[in-house]
Amino acid sequence: MSVEVVTESTPELAAAMNRLVPQLSRSTPPLSEEYVRSMVAQKGVYLLVFRSEDTPEILGMLTLATFDIPTGRRAWIEDVVVHEDARGQGAGQQLVEAAVSLAQEVGAKSVDLTSRPSREAANRLYRRCGFVERETNIYRYQG
Image 1: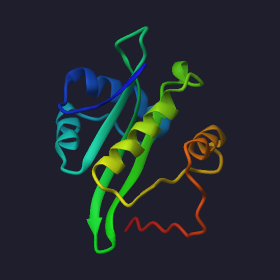
Image 2: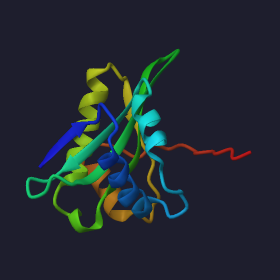
Image 3: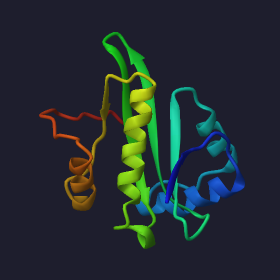
Image 4: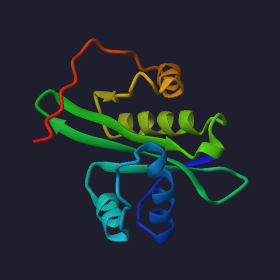
């Protein structure tokens, strides 16, 4: 099992993302190869993927976004997803731990993420990885 940081977009990556994203969000339209290429090229945004030893296929992914603000460099984990056939084998934990390590390497002062309460397994995973629930309000403007 291995986690790698994607450094270039490939058709294989776009296909894998289009297999995984619907397991995370049914409302997201398919991603074009051009969109995936532009996403991977963003400064401060890292796409991490998981592969098992049994298959070279990408079985999981997450996005780590880092950014600088007046109080320091921060990091945010988004879009954590492991293929339903590979869940329960440690892929999610390896992805999250690799993202936290990468965030620390690039100097992030903290790493945040959100997860719906209904995603019970994901919430257990985040607590196992050392995340603690914060007392906060999350607001979203969708204009």
